[in-house]
Image 1 (cartoon, helix red, strand yellow):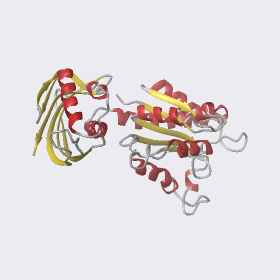
Image 2 (cartoon, helix red, strand yellow):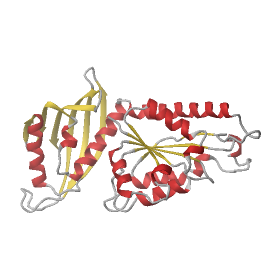
Image 3 (cartoon, rainbow, N blue to C red):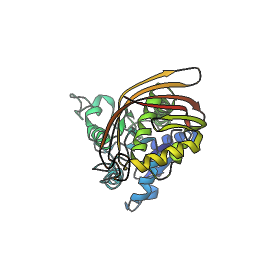
Image 4 (cartoon, rainbow, N blue to C red):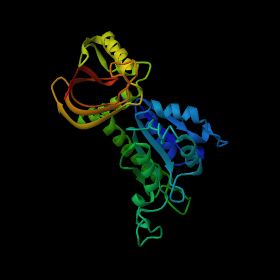
Length: 318
């Protein structure tokens, strides 16, 4: 299941003729979505960093929804980024909490399209003006997707736009954004590849609670590993306990190759993975570092709520 988090950066939604409509349409049409309206949560600009980071951790798809102010984001959203994307959360030695999360920029632009041209009064194209946000995605390890934006999204009575026309533009913008979200939520080959990379990122941390893994495992899963054959959730937990006794958290699974084939039952996945890790002194590796390459084979089925369920998982060391 893909959880969608929408961060509304409009500083005064009550007076918005477009962002309000976009957010309401998303709330009505998108499943598993949380919309956080920063102007209502933080009218004093005092961001609750812990709460915002928890929301980001729970999300698979992150949407930044905002009006384009002076070729950038509004001050409230900029402060949110400054405060929430902190060291060892979004960047730094341990700052991998946003890795492989999907990012969509969704924004409304007052000026017409032709003005964002070398010969227009704004001179620079939108793709160039949003490069700082694109680089933010790259630095934090998020997957940057094509932005959704609309021009001429301002209403000045008697001067610029009719209100009804503007509202229709907002509805069309909403449809484009929903299409972009649905494309990321669709369980296809690309979804499976993203799932696999997120799986390894989570496994690298060797969290105390194994539930974040078992929720994606079939009850009767066959877990075939170099350590032996393990069956079902209890078998996985037994294997996981063995692994935690061997390896120190903050491992590094590097996916060197991945091939996804769609089957009648779901998907068959073949991977080549390079594992680099430090081991405990009391383990069978006696504290030596590990650098091994393995071939993995997964069989997965689609699940209406969880997205994917692993039916069989096999690892062979090369």
